[in-house]
Image 1 (cartoon, rainbow, N blue to C red):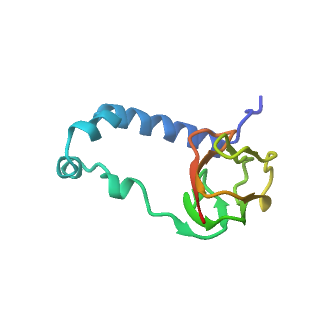
Image 2: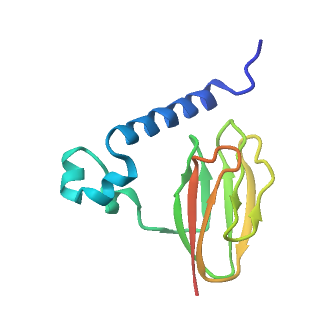
Amino acid sequence: MPLPFSRRALAAAALSAVAATSLAACGGATNAATNPPAAQAAHGEATGAEASAAPVATSTVTIDNFAFAPAAITVKAGTTVTWTNKDEEPHSVVSSDEPMRSPTLAGQNTTFSHTFARPGRYAYNCGIHPFMHGTVEVTA
């Protein structure tokens, strides 16, 4: 019987489950609130500076290996951002911060574009794979 998901999608889901289990085992998000960065680094954990990279000035985002790259971008108001799916698996781009919902980007090299008119910080994710996150910082 064929599987409803590819092996690559199942592997990504399994990796996500392992990461969540590992995060819980070392204290998870509450650990960051109770342990200073030096203690986190001693345990091999990411500190705040390492966990959130500075936004990259670009208007193009690639979807590859179940991730948005770059995950954080910055653009000026009025800029059109284009997402391109390089994965074999379908993905989408969804945000409730900025009413935005792409169609399913099925197949490699399918694209979705959206123009950001107002300054602000807009979080988005893949509607099919909610563990995939990204942000668009729009400046004046």
